[in-house]
Figure (cartoon, rainbow, N blue to C red):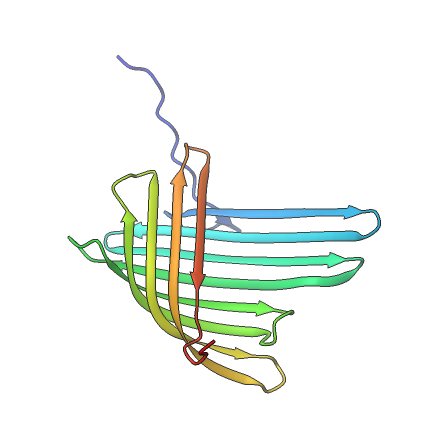
Length: 187
């Protein structure tokens, strides 16, 4: 008889007694660094990411805040929050997606921006449980404002690529890049 104990199920994360995103694959990261010499630098980053899949629905949520200073002067101060929903189609490789995103950045002309996009995605690698490579193409728009009454709506296309490699039970390498070309800009 095998007496090897079974691994324990991970406990759901609770915050003040409330379960937070039960059943989601989620992680939180925080980083602080700085230096002092000819210049003084301080960098802070906090992020939260979560993924969930059930049936034909796949979700990704994420947010991050970054602040950097050099000699006491702010050189970066930004935040984003996003949600992406994939609608998987039984017996098909492609899927549909919709996404929304909010950005805040002290060093952009727009200061705040809300964008939404939709389109079609395709998994280039899907047979390996430890490796995925997904492409996305679609369109949408963003609404940007600077707080001084300068508002702008911009139609845009979407081209994206994301990959994930689960190296082992404790290490994962992943990347995500999305390009939003302005459909009104010819340059």
